[in-house]
Image 1 (tube, rainbow, N blue to C red):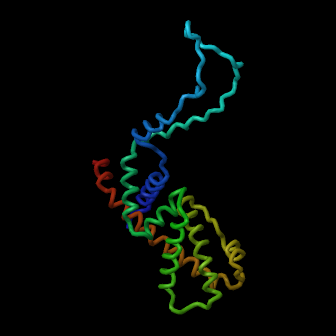
Image 2: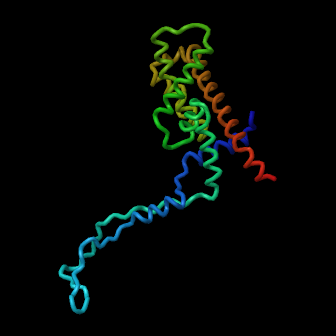
Length: 215
């Protein structure tokens, strides 16, 4: 298992890699070619002198829209690309967790994959089946646990405290500690476990670059 400092470094690299908005030289050239000439109307010229003939009054308004400039390419773009490639080669659960936790533009399908994985692993730990009503409440708790875990992991901020969880799920306060808190903690443990695997896999996939940097 990676030490806490290494985990933090890998998390930061994953976050940067999955949120980079940059373009290659070819894409920048393409962007430049999309800039059009704002003078779209034909220009009237005198046949003899060749001077322009302005028949309309000059207006101080420009309505043509130009393509916005692209972001510059980061200096470590190739290393970030290697991280993204390593993430996309992971199994579906870890790949989806990476996007869910560290990407600002994550898709809903990533949330669904992670939720299904957490629920499946959570049930594997149980020694007896739940009643239907409690099962539905626990399924809703999975999504709250995922949101809270992401907030704690990324920003060290608790998103859903005990009171808010009880209000959102309709749980009796007197039953919280005995009947529900252990399940909440178990879901967090499942997420911690797969996140540790994710960080370890990405670390080893990019280890050659790290070794050359410290050599």
